[in-house]
Figure 1 (cartoon, rainbow, N blue to C red):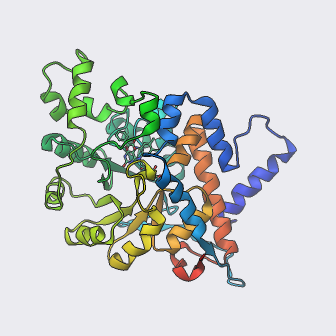
Figure 2 (cartoon, protein in one colour; figure 1 turned 120 degrees about the horizontal axis):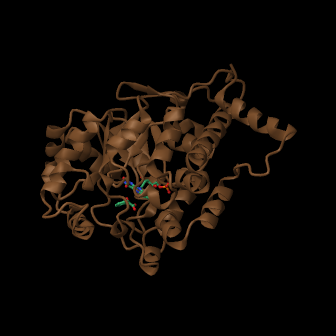
Length: 388
Ligand SMILES: Cc1cc2nc3c(=O)[nH]c(=O)nc-3n(C[C@H](O)[C@H](O)[C@H](O)COP(=O)(O)O)c2cc1C
Ligand SMILES: O=C(O)C(=O)c1ccccc1
């Protein structure tokens, strides 16, 4: 059987016989442009904007240009292997859908459209704590397909414990704890546009449906949505947490725990000392600390500390197939794709997310083969040259 990339590529060239005037973009930048065309300023900049002046958001992309692949020849790359194993599960591709909140502001299909696209491809969908649909609805929509849950660790331990218990009992197989967003950063465009989706009741599905959250309210969210939203804003983030608090999570879940937002090698060391199961090197797509190190630049330093003791994943800046290969050559076991999926969702709902992921993986598979690499497991820094 032909490899994934060849199949997708051939299927596209074959449409030459009957061209579709409404076909979806192939060029990545055209997805961005399409999203800009269909979204109002508020939601568009909520997705596309970064913290402060967007310096880190730009460095995330530029960092990939610092590294060049050095292709090797005559290495029998006829049958290529893209599968990865994480926490005892084998996944089709080294790619996961990044946790993204408030997807209802992007397209009416929202979280469920993205979740279905991932389910169809066997790509783990990381459901956000800030999804508009409750995690159980997303899980039902996905059936047996792989799914992880992202935790925003809030100020109320009962609500946090309840989220963990709900995630485990509704079939999620890992917990991603996002540490870099205990407070929303200074986001110039959202402030300019006076745009905060939660105040309009978007992205709060897990909270409004949570028994521990509801127990704290005088009136139910159905009776008094505004008070419930105010309660949410007070509870959402917990800037007071420390490393010692991690034991609380372990007590409330038996699932693997990954920490998302690690950039400093000393934090990677602390993560290992505190017994977590995985690390995600990320700066949240440059949406939190403007001027922060790019995620790709942080990766080698984290790898020096972690080596192969824990799986390290990364996100922030993955746009094309070669980006995935570079991140993996520097040590990432898999990558998370964020904004590109949202541009796909904006342009064409579920079909758009599917298309964006499929194109990126086809590009990755073909590029990998052409670089002389037969399996994602073979990728090492020896496939790269740093541009001085
Ligand atoms: C609109 C939007 C919402 C996001 N919401 C969440 C979230 O709820 N939880 C989370 O851990 N990360 C969230 N992220 C960060 C992503 O998981 C990921 O780290 C980031 O998008 C990677 O950067 P990139 O998309 O530029 O590659 C969000 C990102 C965007 C663009
Ligand atoms: O906007 C974000 O980056 C984000 O992570 C978030 C935070 C709270 C709710 C929804 C999304």
